[in-house]
Length: 78
Image (tube, rainbow, N blue to C red; front, side, top):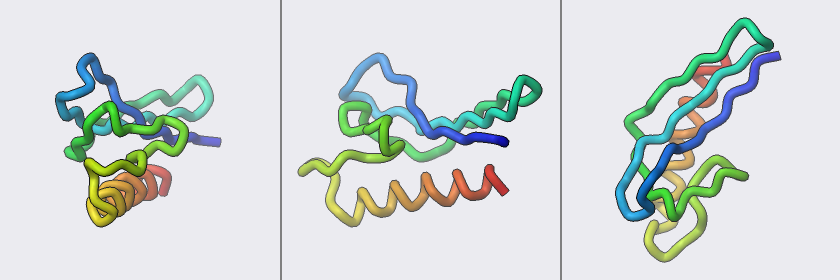
């Protein structure tokens, strides 16, 4: 069964980074894709693979980013 995970690679917490996706399926498939979705690392929650609730991101911005992440995740898994 294939798994897809959204993650970021960040070295500074105050510089926006692009959300990356990793597709794994057994030992045969291990692929990464860097999206155009940008987030600030200090507001990224790796457990939910999305943005933390914070005063920096408005609710509409958070929902928009989380929706974009979900849409890409869905596209990769189908």
